Image (cartoon, rainbow, N blue to C red; front, side, top):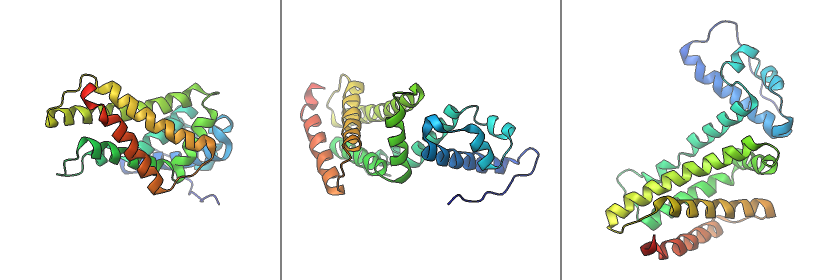
Length: 212
């Protein structure tokens, strides 16, 4: 059931209303994308269902692509992958950090809104390059964060790493590939199966650490 949203009054919103406006737009846009797919989604319907003027909508999100980008940005912010590697004063070993990162990303990616958006992206990316670009951008963010973590651990452990970027790329794309395989085959995994797979994958990768 669609949640009723009060119609906004005319005029420039106060500063403390701007975030609420954008959150409402992204919520409505997400409903539209999940109901009609990316190709069938309509900005006009989003404007109507958000009960805002076209000027208000287009001044913040100039296109359907911009709205989808905003949804992905909000998901990344909620996912907060950096928090897994920056656990207060706790220092994670290389293996612990890689496992924690992969488990956090995979656990959230099999849930609710994020799972639905991922399915949409992978099902329509062959028709819309902007969806493929969003998927690639998310992967690159993960690669960069893991590369930084590998550098940090190399310095702390006294184990040089000549190419942390490539190692991070192998790690992130391995995790992403496993996830996509589960989606494409329609399979399901338990939390324990996921943790076991992550542990084995990290072990295989780190066994070759001296050659990094």
